[in-house]
Length: 228
Image 1 (cartoon, rainbow, N blue to C red):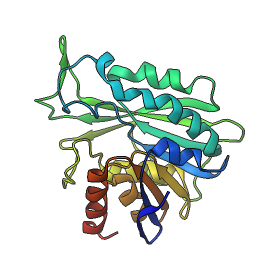
Image 2 (image 1 turned 90 degrees about the vertical axis):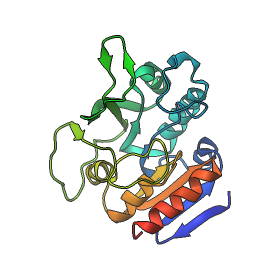
Image 3 (image 1 turned 180 degrees about the vertical axis):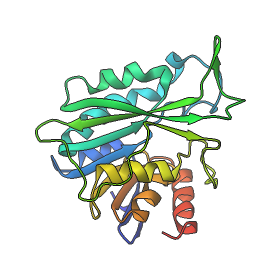
Image 4 (image 1 turned 45 degrees about the vertical axis):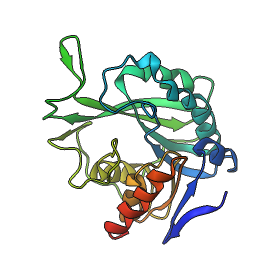
């Protein structure tokens, strides 16, 4: 797969993220941090039953490949959707990935959030797995301990143009606890490049992949405009 973009420890590919993982050696990746697709064929924020989200099927081959390429004891962290969490846990069955816990992003001003029955969807889960076979990794330099629920009045201080952009400060805090400087982080669904930007700002290497060329244009612009 030919690189779409390369610059100062960042490599981005245009292609299928699962296929890219298949090309990697076993036990070769320090961290996988990603936000898999679960609405790519629908409008974000639409009130549609989760069973109709046809793009979620890629989570099964994804988790198998993440389990294979991740180094023992290291972290796979996935932003996901509350409505379809059982699919993620089902996809991890039979792999070497051990579910550890969830973190949450709480959107305190979600007045236009998706509602189900009497409850407004104001939280986004972040699911943390480690790979069996070694002691759990701890970073050489431990950052500040924070609550397991990140509270936000708005998701991002700047907009990349991607409808599911995640906050870089949260991503950076996760990266700092799950890797050391110089480690390689892979995002097989890199979207607007928030993980790549966060990896570079914390002195980590990054490889991102996305099948949508429009998102890759945004990713390069996003990282370039934020002094990567």
